[in-house]
Image (tube, rainbow, N blue to C red; front, side, top):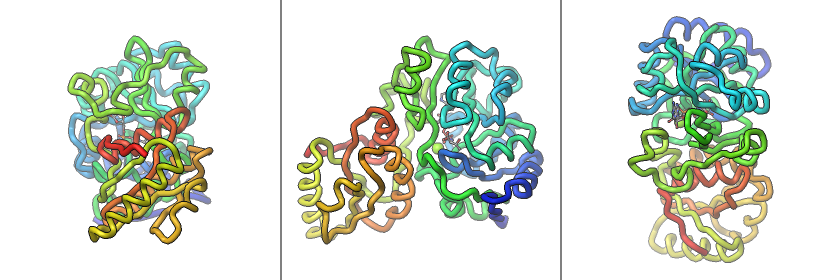
Amino acid sequence: MTTQVINTEHQAENGCRLGAKLIQAGELVAFPTETVYGLGANGLDSDAVNKLYEAKGRPADNPLILHVSKKSDVKQLWYDVPQRAKQLMDAFWPGPLTLIYQKSDIVPYKTTAGLNTVAVRMPDHKTALTLIRACGLPIAAPSANISGRPSPTTAAHVLEDMNGRIPLILDGGPCRVGLESTVLNLASKVPTILRPGGVTHEMLSNIIGDVEIAKSVLSPVEEAESVASPGMKYKHYAPDAQVIVVTGDILEGAKRISRMYNIARVQGKSCAILTTAQTKSYFKGKITLEIGDMNKPETLCANLFSAFRQLSGKVDIIFTQSLPTDNEGLAYMNRLLRAAGFETVKA
Ligand code: TXA
Ligand code: MG
């Protein structure tokens, strides 16, 4: 199969019309959202959803998110719409927040991987919304990467993974947020963040009060938890390189990284350091990639996956430093720690 790429940055209509035709016919189409690129299929069609799992090599027990183009679409997908969901949709949709609640009968178990709940979100991206509207269907869309690789934040990343596997990629330019949406479970007694993202714990608590953070967000998932949060048990977001995260004081951490870098070089290993506006000056003469400003964690989020892809397979070790886990720092550290297999080095 040849994979066509259509730019939708300036004119979304034509590409989306073709995309909608393909999705209605049970095919797969990759499209941009504000978080990462998604690989879309008709979310109400088990056969189409099956193709998604195949194209990504995704484990069959990991459920999908349904993407809608307006808030009222949740009515047909959920058993009912709880008050908390209404408040959150009003505050954050369209935007990087996925809500999980009891599914209705029209949602196939293939989409929810056998669960009685379904995840829904309304993306904040013109191409995505135009495509969903043109389909007239909820679009099931996991991130458009091969399972286990970093999520794609440009159409070129999608092509790297999906060339020859899908008929169409809609290219809407680089994704603004860069990490996947916040996943909030509203089917549990206390709403629980299963995956942190651009809509932060602080923002959610502001609207609905008590919100828990699943333990698996910052530590390896335990067997008992994997039922509520199937996506968290897989090694995710990992580049083809060892990732070493140094925690603690910034200056001490930079010194520690420099020492480890020099030792690794003597051992014949190739290394790179992910740096920030605050730390780049500590690493003169070393191979570095600056990914943002530590005082604006959203800039680091936006560039992390792209940096992973750039260095994947090119170096043996990627060194970087941790961020505090408040606000967007929680999403950033969730992805970084998973890429590092949850091992950190104290400065
Ligand atoms: O930003 C995003 O959410 C992107 C874009 C394309 O919208 N999509 C995305 O999908 O990241 P995916 O499939 O890569 O991640 C979906 C996550 C997985 O961790 C999955 O386990 C979880 O959501 N999930 C989906 N439905 C669930 C459910 N019913 N219960 C618990 N977790 C669920
Ligand atoms: Mg994914």
